[in-house]
Length: 304
Ligand code: 13P
Ligand code: SF4
Image 1 (cartoon, rainbow, N blue to C red):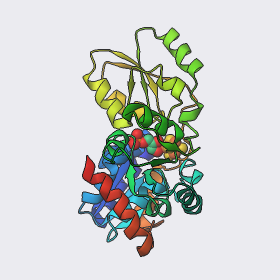
Image 2 (cartoon, protein in one colour; image 1 turned 180 degrees about the vertical axis):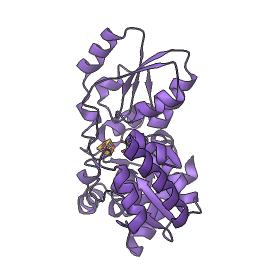
Image 3 (cartoon, helix red, strand yellow; image 1 turned 120 degrees about the vertical axis):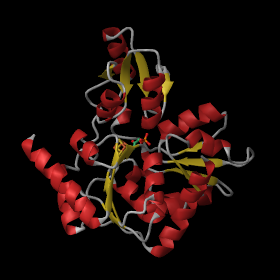
């Protein structure tokens, strides 16, 4: 506790000296969320990264998020305190795999979840996050074939919501895909009054049992605005910190203790401190990839 307090104070000081902004995903450790200037979902974080006037962005999240910040704000120094914090789902599609699939589906429009590398975004037509995926797919001409990469669970959910047939990719989130129908049924039995909140990265049979399906920011809004007082949470454990802050007096039960993303937990206060002190490790994107990837992100940001 004392050590966290001291690190937090030093981070705040360094942040001023470096003219830095700290952005944190809601899945980060509570003490990391607390030192951040902005805590949010992937869409909110992209908007912050695009709009900030800070010189340095310290990204407390995973690699693709810092890469998106570097694509949107190339003149800024983007730091990822734990450079090995990746997203296993993003690694389930490479630019080479995608090029081959595009050849097999001539004329296809590629919608890429932001959980992809810059190279994959550069090969895609438009990006989306879990918060705007339905709107992004709805914005495409109805007669156009669409390939949705890499999350098959989000893709299935979007197909259902838009009434469109989508070509899916066999990717998934290692953390959300572990949540089973049985986990939800057991949680409902333990908490019969609670509403079930599920992230669209969950399996279809989990989504079918949910009262609300939403991105992390969407879930927080839902819980704040809902008349209900108890919720079963079908997303990564880090979000509990924000639920407790934003909805004091309400109760939140994690749907399963498997809902922990080790990559999201790899960033610590020590590493944030070191990143600000050394201005390392940096995330950069080569110009020719950046320009193409930027088009996918800008098309997304123009939609909602
Ligand atoms: P959102 O916060 O956009 O819902 O992101 C979920 C996720 O798994 C990010 O890695
Ligand atoms: Fe990737 Fe899932 Fe972790 Fe998000 S929670 S970073 S999608 S593995």
